[in-house]
Length: 228
Image 1 (cartoon, rainbow, N blue to C red):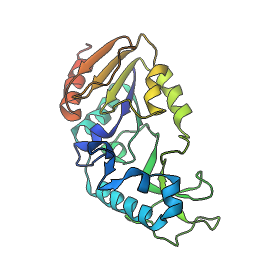
Image 2 (image 1 turned 180 degrees about the vertical axis):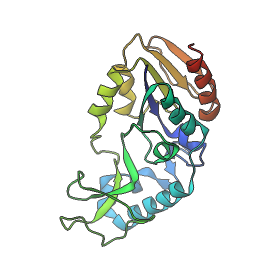
Image 3 (image 1 turned 90 degrees about the vertical axis):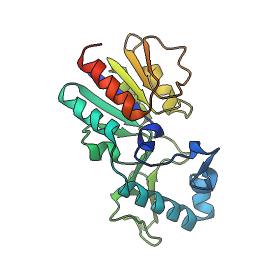
């Protein structure tokens, strides 16, 4: 059975990682438009670089939680493919093999000239003055507000293959990611794990699990393994 999982900030929150949506558009005390847009990078690259260096330090220090681990364990029984809006690498560190990052992954850097040139970050910091092979400053491998989402078409194709779809900790408020559910076959069962269920009235075959990610994944694991 093909299970396609869409994950948002809610799954990483239980590993202690905050999201800007926790506090009225502020992310760790910063307005997101001051640290997460191409314009911010042009205006103050030192601030943006240090902001993501600090996020990277937090992510390196964090550990995958049971929700991440259960998803990885389900690969023993099912064909599981994860599409995540998160920029952390907790799914991979939990053992998941097929993970598509819609918004990039913070453990990599990319060229400021060519976003297809990516590199693994050694340690927690990208330093100003570190250049790509084209001679351009390296920046975080993260899709900022106002930038294209290069993996969205790949993700849409994955969603068309779903026999079961699982949404974990996503508000379905950020596009184009929120539109991915439209590509899931209507007959597929769609499990939604979130204490606050997003608006899904237009979809069929919805099963709501109104819990945080860890408890919700424990319940879903039992349902899937028992064929419910």
